[in-house]
Length: 278
Image (cartoon, rainbow, N blue to C red; front, side):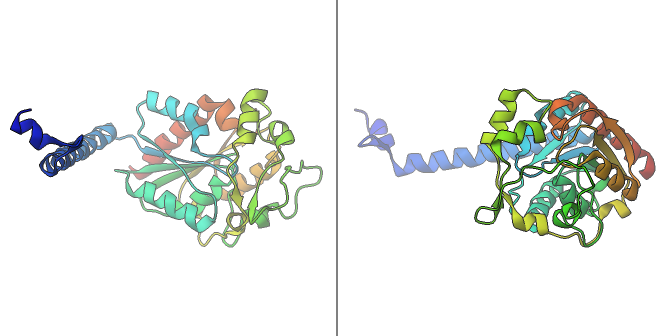
């Protein structure tokens, strides 16, 4: 075996010199990737369109936004999907703020369900130009999910939330389809039920310090067949926030069953927020 080959491999393992070359090569690759990323971000915002940041709610993760994501990307928007742990409101706001910090230019911040609480607090970030609530909670100062659901409207359906387990909540699997995702296929709803993300009781109790909708324009999509947050409660919250409202026939999972309608409202918000800043 040649000396060069011996220097590259001893006992089947790379030599120290080879390792150093590998590390240098890796670092150069990373540097190139970051340079490309900066160019990409510049190109993504060159059109002047707002960035869109999507925030999921309780019991689910960010993958449910895929249809909305694809519709927005097709129309040329730069989109970020936040993956919140949903253990506490403070943690979720912090994660969302980190996502906002990576954006170049103005942002339309979108929240579904409990995600509405997160964007109400995180939306005070100066990059946020507008808020979009999708079948979401839109609390006022000092309010939380717990306070908003404490006194349900007469005749309103009661979500099948099981008693807390070690400080976390789950929905009853057998009733997940009917309550959360009635307009999705039974198979899709069953998968969602079996892959639920634990929702921290602490997150439900997290209160708003200053609602962003008091200083930022907002848009609201009411899901008319929602059995988690009653449509009348959605209408009341959107009216209080002074939101521009659209109503769409859909379940609480309307962002999955009607992604085009949700994306359309987000794009409307992006155009409206741009007009207010000109």
